[in-house]
Length: 196
Image 1: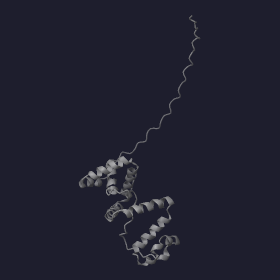
Image 2: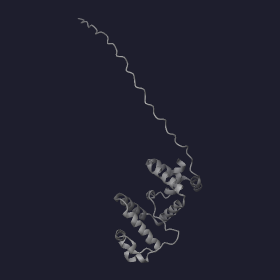
Image 3: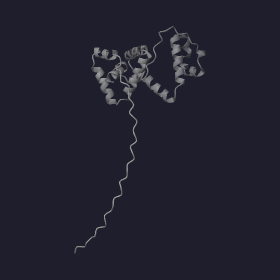
């Protein structure tokens, strides 16, 4: 469990930034070149959201247009709580030094290059990490920071440990009803003698 958690910590927390708990912005797609997207193809709500880009929309690279269109569509589908969280994450992202953002983008690309099953394992380990008490998370971060690069590679390159399947506990047997003891016979009242 600790090795798997350290693996997760290595991927997500080596930069020791709280914003790593959230998804980093998607890097530009490396697949086929994106098609330009016209301003008119955006919904009225998207146009209102992206109004700051209206005058320069046609000069944006197609990848940026597609990214903005996808992001605005996601934004419009969010609840108010999700939007507040996204704004907070964006502010944290913008506050990071450019070098740290570059490192995080690289790690995000590494994560996205993993097979879906491995991504799911990392997400699950990350979820468990986030549920740990702060002291335990800090201890794992401390252990990670004290590892040599070789030790970190060793931890992150090993396949996850196979845990034995959990066995369901046997169903509890209802205890037999307790038998009431026979009523006690009261002794005859004692005679009290007055001593005078």
